[in-house]
Amino acid sequence: MYTGEAPVTSQSDDERAAALKTALANVVIERTGDSGVLARAEVARAVGEAERYVLTYQYRRGSGADASAPLVLVAQFDGAAVDRMLRQLGLLGGEAAATPAEAPSEATVRIDGIHGADDYARVMRYLGSSNFVRNAQPLHAQGDSLVLRLSLSTSLARFLDAVGLERTLAVADAGTHGDGIDATLALGQ
Image (cartoon, rainbow, N blue to C red; front, side, top):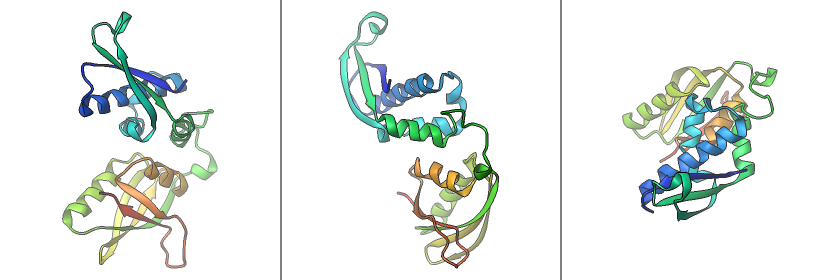
């Protein structure tokens, strides 16, 4: 159920990385029953992180429909992690409809690890491309931290779950501490 395959011509790192994405995409389509699900940007981003979900992989000789490729990568993915990712994206168990906990929200977040204009631009690009962020308004910067007011299309908890699926930002602290900061994130490398 959590095994995907993809034809490859070699065992190179680049080809393996691409094949793992294809294999995970096949698993996602199988689990959701929706062949168009990969058109959603957040799903495509999650599938792009296929190496985070793989437990094992191996190669076998191509045969039958795979005969055009000398090898087929066969990947076994972590079922619990894949299902968690699909639930967070609202794709399992009829969870696509927003619940009150997923209603649009506002949050003040601090992002640590901003060491210059390139880091700032990277954060703003990331937030601007997120389907969960309607608007990101910088409030102030101090040291290597940037404080922003986010207008979200979902709850802060769901946004933080989605952030946790990717590598651009990491959730450092998801609690309010009386300083007006709802969550602290850290810029990844």
